[in-house]
Length: 182
Image 1 (cartoon, helix red, strand yellow):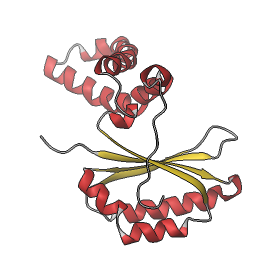
Image 2 (spheres, helix red, strand yellow):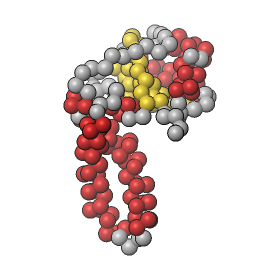
Image 3 (tube, helix red, strand yellow):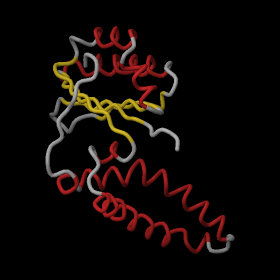
């Protein structure tokens, strides 16, 4: 069994006037992280209107790759550069389904959340494209449908469903943990 990808989830409070500087600083951090083996990607999620807490996500192939990045001198220097931009940071690591759910809720709750996302999307797909794909051999129908639905589910609908159901999935707040000097 191969190691699970690991996500470093960082919540950072940023003064609204410093947002552009923060984004430039975060892009520099992403370019630095991309130099490390196992880097899979990064991104920034903006807060709701009027908010100041940004979610920064760094994804690595495994714990070892993430540790090389989080313990590196390059990252320490980069974090030092951002000291004046960030008022507060909280860091949490997640792997596998934990990246969507936080600390994984019971499997049955995960299954319900995924099904609630998958059913309407699969139904809509079938209604929109089912007849067009019916002429294809079953292997190609399944190939086309999974090639289209998997990224849509992973990047849009499962995250949406888990946000919508977050209080049911995670009734108790999760404690944040520190990584290096975030």
